[in-house]
Length: 460
Ligand code: ATP
Ligand code: CA
Ligand code: CA
Image 1: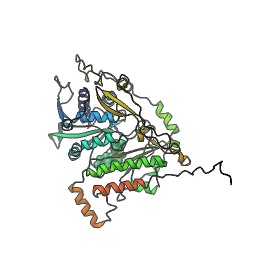
Image 2: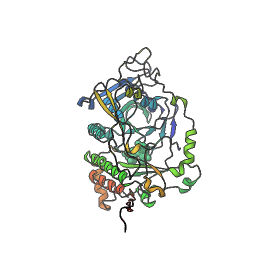
Image 3: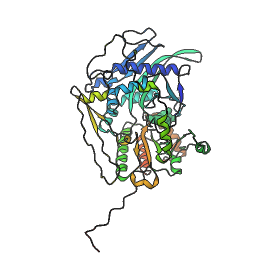
Image 4: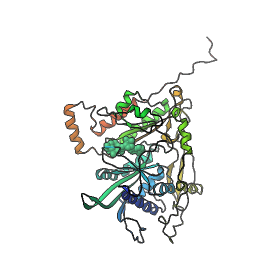
C-alpha cells in the first residue's frame, strides 16, 4: 500500500492545531453518549462549547495547550455515524489513540488542510467559514437524504467542529477560529489505489500533467490525482454490469439532485481504481506490514476519556461501556432484511443487509453493508468484464459544501464572455450537476449479455 502525507508529531508546525482538534473531538464525542432519542429541531441548532487549559476542571480534562472547542449538533452527527455503520468505540480509538496524524500536502487549491487519522480511516479537513455555514444550514436535508438513501455516494460527514486558539501571524498573536469536519476516507487503508480521478464533468483546465517516468519506476509511490481530460484521453471506463450500472446511476442522480437543490456546485466524483491484477504481490506485503500495537489495543480506559474516579453511566446507550457489537447482540435486536434483489444473472450477489440498532424504543438503522463499499470497502467490476481485468472501484462525491455564491456568478459571467459555457467549470448548480451526471453516465461501460438462445424444446 502507498502511504501518503507527512507525520504530524511534536515539533511539526501544525502539531498544536492537530493536538487540539483531537483533544476536543475525544472529549466531546465521549461525552455525547447518553440514550439516543429521536432528533428534534433543537438538535439541529444545538452547539456546545468547551474550554481547555493546563489545569483542567470538572468539565474538561487538563490539556497541554489552552484552546476553546465548539461542537456543532453533536446528537445529529452521532446519529449520522450510527447510520453510516460506525462503531462509537472504534471511532474514538481511530481519532485519538495517539496524537499522530498525517498531513496531506495541500491537495486542493482552496487552502484547506487535510489530516488522516492514524489508521487512515478518517480524514479531518479544515473548511472555510462559508462552507461551515452552508453545511449547518442544510444539515437537516443532508441527514434526511442519508436516512432515505443508505447507499448514498455523498461524502460521509461524522462531525463538525471549531477550534479557537492563539496563532502567531506576522509577529502578532491572534485568536483564530479553525472550522473542520471529520469525514470518511474513501480509499481503503490496506489496498493500493492504482489510479485516482477527481471528476467534475468539465474539460476546462481539467488535466493533470503526469510524470510517466516517475510512475513507471518499480515500487514507485507517485500517484497523481488525475482529472477529466486524463480520464478521456486514457479511455478509462467504469466496468459494471447492467444492474450495477443502473443502481449506480440512480444513486448518483439522486445525490446530485440534492446538491443542485441546495445550490451546491464545484463538487467532484472521486474515483479510485484498484487493479486486482497488479495487486497480488502488494496485498501480501500489506498484510505483513506491522500495525502499531496501540492501534490493536483500544485504549478506551485512557484516563483522559473517563476521568479518574468518574464512573461512566451504566446504560446501554453508553458506547464506552460496551463495544457496539455487544450492544447489538444484547439487543437490541438484529434484523436482516433484504433491501433489494437483482437479477442473479447479472452481477455478483447484490443483497444489502441492515442491522437495527435499538436503544430503548428508538431505532437507528445501521447500514452494515453499503452497496458501493461492499467489496474490500469498494465495489468490484462486474464478472461480465472478466476479459478486461478485475478492478475495485472506490467512488464518492467529495467537496460538496461550496455554495453557488455571487463570486461564482461573477466568474461565470466573465468566463462566458470568452468561452463556451459547457467547458467552463463555474456554471449554475443545476447545469453543473447535469454535466457531471452525463459525463459519468457516458463512462460506465456495460457489456450486454448474449441472451441464452439454445432452446432444447425447439427443433429446427
Ligand atoms: P479545491 O476546492 O481546490 O478543489 P479542496 O481543498 O476543497 O480543493 P477537495 O476537493 O475536498 O479539496 O479534495 C482534494 C483532494 O483530496 C481530492 O481530489 C482527493 O484526492 C482528496 N480527497 C478529498 N476528500 C477525500 C476523501 N473523502 N477520501 C479520499 N480522498 C479525498
Ligand atoms: Ca475539489
Ligand atoms: Ca473546495
